[in-house]
Image 1 (tube, helix red, strand yellow):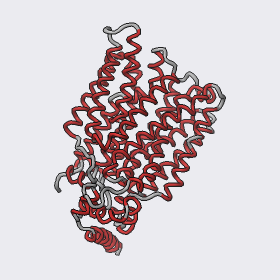
Image 2 (cartoon, rainbow, N blue to C red; image 1 turned 120 degrees about the vertical axis):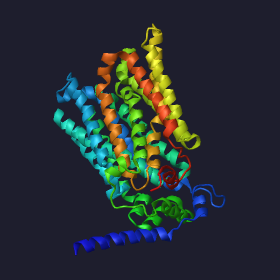
Image 3 (cartoon, helix red, strand yellow; image 1 turned 45 degrees about the vertical axis):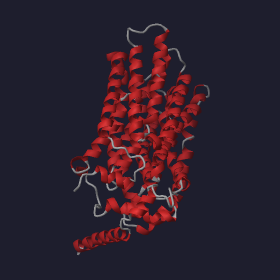
Length: 489
């Protein structure tokens, strides 16, 4: 009886999905209009979907804020909690958060597929609220580490869910611009943490306020997600055709609903299953795009960008620049690059931005390596070192920062998108942690000339990799990208 019941349930789900697909058979003219090529009704208004993108960007803001919140507060925090001068303890405050992010990213795909994108955002905000409250009220190092572990878990869930959501609710013609909003929000979060943290060295206990400050935006994310739209792609995968139509109408407008439903049916006809096995991602027909995504995130981290973000104050200090000024300069360079990406993503395309960005980063790292060589002396060393670092951050934010998350959420097929993103983000956090852990030790052993040359080499490898492997996705529907990338069954 149990077996027949399960079979009947499976047949019911397949029947529901087939009914949805058959109801919205592929209509070329409607799809053409949806993609923005048609002359009759043009593109759907971006104003309908933009408020939901802003709400999703709140998770990216929190991600950036928690990345930067310990930069200015670590010294006063270590005094109050009794671990001042203990470099291992100070390192743990940072690395515990990264470890939590690695764990969170591993589960982000299952969460997003299991409960939907909206609920995943709310589950991301919950550990951020708990962890921030624990950090703000910590009485010793262990309380702080536990709080940072909770925060890290939320940070690991947030970015892949945000990338999925933005890709799935955006009209194709503005998807790149919307994707850049996440990078811009991260940058604003970093700068917000910097400015809120400035009084920490003068006002006793101010570092606790810095952690409390992040609770409000996380609570707002939880509240407003209750009224946000769900991803139509996720609803369609669940066989909820009527709900999918309703969400498309909110996002695009009534005239575009039929075309949007036809687009979904193109790639998902007969290709849905209840679960996605990891073996499919590593050995099946999806292995190429998963390898491409993981490699792109690995090269992004091996470029040395987080070594710059984590240790820029140390490098600027050696050049005689105060840490506050250094952080402001890095923040401005990051902001300017993010604004350029926002304007250019849907004009120049993802691939062009990646190539230009990694090329610029290679030049910047070469400048930094040159500043450490015997070819340069005197004040030129300072100008080249600082100038090279700021150029590196600027060119990173123009492409290598915002593009990978958006590009991968576009490239992965709907059926495996969430789980494949979680694997790639886990690779991101693993390499991120290794770079943060080993950078100062390698700098000691190899020196800045050799280490910066290694980083520049990885940037050049990234240029070659992007040219050979990355597909341009500008202006294409998610279904057309999926069909172009996936080999036939």
